[in-house]
Length: 311
Ligand SMILES: [Cu+2]
Image 1 (cartoon, rainbow, N blue to C red):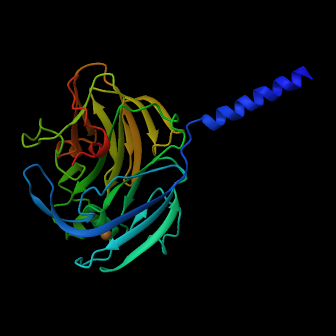
Image 2 (cartoon, helix red, strand yellow; image 1 turned 30 degrees about the horizontal axis):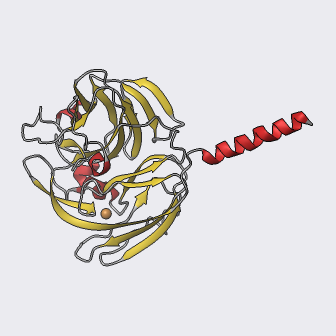
Image 3 (tube, rainbow, N blue to C red; image 1 turned 90 degrees about the horizontal axis):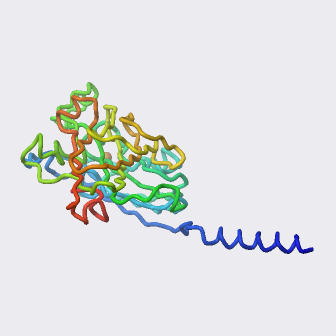
């Protein structure tokens, strides 16, 4: 009798504990993106390029939801555009024809999906020719945070880096098919965060020594693989597709193919800089280097809120 009572108390305690565990409530999230065809700078000098975009930016906005959320998505293809566009979320399981199919300028379309798997996922336009729609800038990331807030160690700062190739002539689909790129970029700019290789660069990533810096890395391609490496650092943890279950420890580099993504955690024990690169060196030396400065005076705003994707 006494024993039964004790089991009852223990079970009630366990139930109360599980109710208190930090599990986010699933919600419905409305996401609307506009396909727009605009001129944007692709380097620190301000060289303009005829891009195709989501919401007038390369990369497009960071979409962020929690595992289990329902995403009600609307794509609007602006009337002023000349081309059909579409949306392909790698975080969704849907019908490729009905949901990811193209719409003409002046049209819009909706689809709904549940973000079942936590992680970091690519999104992109899939309209024909897909290689050109991606090369011209129609890509971004959707981060699906795990519903268990303790599934990943707490990050002190977060950054998004999206790698892509620059093709000098945005109209030359054949040159894209032949992989004739001139530069590899992070977040749509040549040496965007690298004042060492380009004195015109005014931005870099910042953190303090000892902080856990989490980088959501996406390789938009459309063609090149990335051997993602922090020069003078070691990845403390790498999560393939950003899923907490896919954890690896103490890696020097990790290959992320075109259309793929991974989450990388980095902690520096010292002040100084790391250079985050694709160690495929033609890519790094033509523009895919981001300086991450570890300093006790790091700007507290960097790596938080809107400053996870440094524009
Ligand atoms: Cu498109």
